[in-house]
Amino acid sequence: MDRRIKTILRAGITDELVTVRGWIRTRRDTGSFSFLEVNDGSSLANIQVIADKTLENYDREIIRLSAGCSVIVTGLLQKSPAKGQDVELNAESVEVLGWADPDTYPLQKKRHSLEFLRTISHLRPRTNALGAVTRVRSRLSFAINTFFQEREFVQVHTPVITTSDCEGAGEMFQVHATGEKDKNNKPFFGSQAGLTVSGQLQAEVYALALGQVYTFGPTFRAENSNTSRHLAEFWMLEPEMAFCDLACNMKLATDLLKYVLRDVLENCSEDLALFNSFIEKGLLQKLQDVVEKDFVHITYSAAVEKLSSLKDIFDFPVQWGIDLQSEHERYLTEKVYKCPVIVTDYPAGIKPFYMRLSDDGKTVAAMDILVPGIGELVGGSQREERLDVLTRRMVEAGIDIKEYDWYLDLRRYGTVPHAGFGLGFERLVQFVTGMSNIREAIPFPRTPGFAPC
Ligand code: 4AD
Ligand code: MG
Image (tube, rainbow, N blue to C red):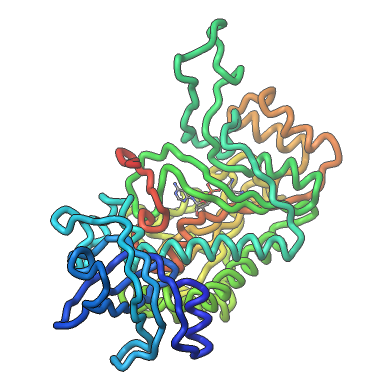
């Protein structure tokens, strides 16, 4: 609902001439007038319009309006005698801008499945559920930016095209110019470039100059896994802080999550109530609990000890040295602790080269934050700031250190302990909206075999 109309409603002022621009949801006719439900996209609430037969285009147009038609309605906002709504708009004019053929318009009055709506990603934001997800996503993005700006972090726009594979997992999409290579048969950028899997390495550059930075943008992974929590294109928030260790990193991530959840609970209550009723019962309580209760912190070794005693429950048996699978992560956060769990000190062998090696020589100063319903929401670490250890780790990982000379320079010149993390933004949207599939958490999902629009 348009902000001015909301203000009018809040102040209880009626008999005001207002204009509503939006799309018809339904039309119902009586003998002498029609009821039009109009939604302008700003909230779940429709404005009920009374269009009287005496309007000049009533027989010609109004009587033919159906779901999806676009209209501009001007009229008096008046107290409604009907139950379930406070006001109605008594139309003085109903201008029809665009028609939507009721025989072919895919969004009918019934409830459509989320799977079906994915096949029409260009129309699904017109539904209550996907409109609400989009508003909540926008607010979460705003809250994240506000959190960091209030703390004087500097936002850095790290590149989308890069030659470095931060995670070293071989999941980069390659970038080629159309028309193939240039005359010298060299790749466009000199060496083979791809779409970034993470902005972290470049964020480190700026953290070691500006102190506290964050990058928040699209990242890409050619992961051929069709799961409910993986996308080929997803948005990642990545703060990076100089003079910060693992404990400081954990604290920032915890403060951030509590802050953004408190913010959406306050500012998106109507949309969250819809999810609480139709998508995940108990959602509001779950979010409130995260805001209020402490997160659990355990080490990877302690988690493995707990999980390995439950052998028959899992498809993948747990033993020290394995990467925790989603089933293990979810068991910890949903069954054992029933709250967000921070797991730290993973084996060096299953984590990327940049994580700081601990004194035991076996583990790294890594942290993952697991949340119910999702599993891993955040992955981060203290970074290896010692030139000799980092160089050794990179060589062991088979990385060509000449290509990363710039990254090693950060350790040659004025190195400091530093840390950061990556938060998968769609997983956060999933957690907040209760959507069980990540494809609902982004406007245009890209997954193997699927990238329409
Ligand atoms: O754990 P990841 O791979 O960590 C990094 O990329 C680090 N460089 C981040 C850092 O320290 N600055 O990814 C971070 C988060 C995961 O915890 C997960 O929430 C999300 O990104 N993520 C994905 N989300 C959707 N689809 C995918 N394919 C994802 N892969 C990771
Ligand atoms: Mg991870």
